[in-house]
Image (cartoon, rainbow, N blue to C red):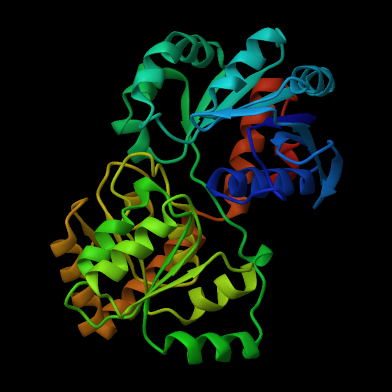
Length: 380
């Protein structure tokens, strides 16, 4: 069997949440005997095909980007050629240009789409795109939601509920680097022995402005790892509020990120809008056994973080509630430790890359009609 993944970006060019999912899936499926191609757009001059952990990553030149939607002229031909070789096409939503490529190339292969998020911000453009979106989703053989929470709260997914499968995102901890003692010592000297950690791209829906408001009047060290379009805005807010306990570290290497995940007291994840459909970096906190604080926004964040079990869940856009949650964990270390242990146990039970990959490969088999050839090898 050969599967083609298609999305606007992919590893190694970028590594956000969707790219992480594609990487884990492509890597895991290739180990189970599935031939995997990943096609994405790249801003760099020239295009190339490289091998990444057992699968092929193809890049087409990105010619234009409007409202977070990337466009490419050459990708039509590249996609058509790769699709002819594939037994199944695996799309990753949302990316409106992807729908155009799908219809323009007249795909006749089995298709699935992983529905990563509703479209939240571009409401005016959504009115124009909605008919194409509905036609695209209606034509998919199967739609995959990443959590039962998102399926229940997405009007779009409810419209197609009869062909939705729920497959939670999974991570492979073995793909994360083991930090050296030198890096652990370095970061402990720099940020201290007890701190809350946020990791992620600095975007509008991450709720970091709420976290900064919550930090006012407290002494809890807060470390923010990541870069993004609102970084300068957040730094200015922190300075305006006179926050001495917030440390912006910018983009860091994976080893440094893991060192901070290993050292931190707890993970704080204040995303307040449904654009945060799952929360891969929140799941990383669970994977490293940390108690979590997140907001109830009806998405996968509270499928990962179970209130009072693996951490605390607060109302969105409520800095007072967020401050109280940090205070509670800070002042109750035994409770925090127990929550972290349960968070890690939940990761191993529900969120490993192995579980995710096997679920997808079973679905591939079902749609392609391989009669369980691969599924029989990996177990039902």
